[in-house]
Length: 170
Length: 104
Image (cartoon, rainbow over all chains, first blue to last red; front, side, top):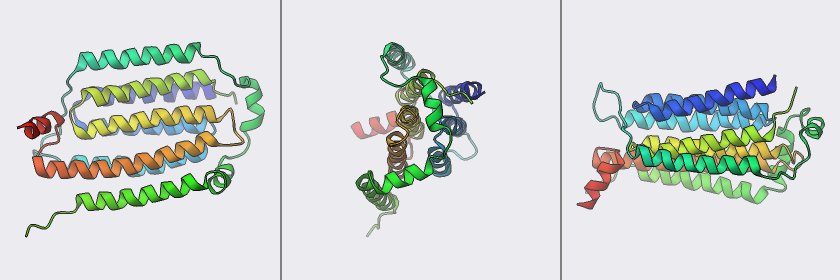
């Protein structure tokens, strides 16, 4: 059951990403990205990462995608016409990405994993939620990265506000 | 409830990464390039979460993927502010047009 759901959402994610590449309309590309992000959130839940899935929903879909949609609307040159984005370098781009994908797939399929087998995994990780452990880790083992991340968020907020304010013309 | 094996998740991450790279290479609209970067971040997160299941007590993978999301949010906020500024200056966000205008 889990495996079927995983394949459904994986194919949905790939199909939406391909649609994002194929379409010329930037707004449709944003909606394709929305479907991809939702499918990846579903796959996070299937991988027992419930908190990461919720964070994905709130940060990516609630934050980043809304930002993208707003900037698409704000940077619309021609009123009443859809925002177009043509693609160039089709052949070399496909060549690069295809070669990288072939290399990665070869590496993934031929690698020697030093992990316990999948059957021993089942007993350890599918009962409790991950939120408790993540919360404890964030204030013990990962306290310094946590603080640095909050600093980075503050700096990014100030930087974005500073960049996007209108200059005063004296 | 069967567990999802590791290899398909890693392959899905690789495919999403390459599609994001393709968007960055081929698209000339600055916002679509940013969307490709978001796709690449998501592929990286998928790998981190997939490997996390093999060390569930430490939760390093999930915590690291949360940090990746924080960086992605900060990056996209700053980048979209820059894009809006560039659009106000050049009246276009086509990357090739901006380059030819700055070359002159």
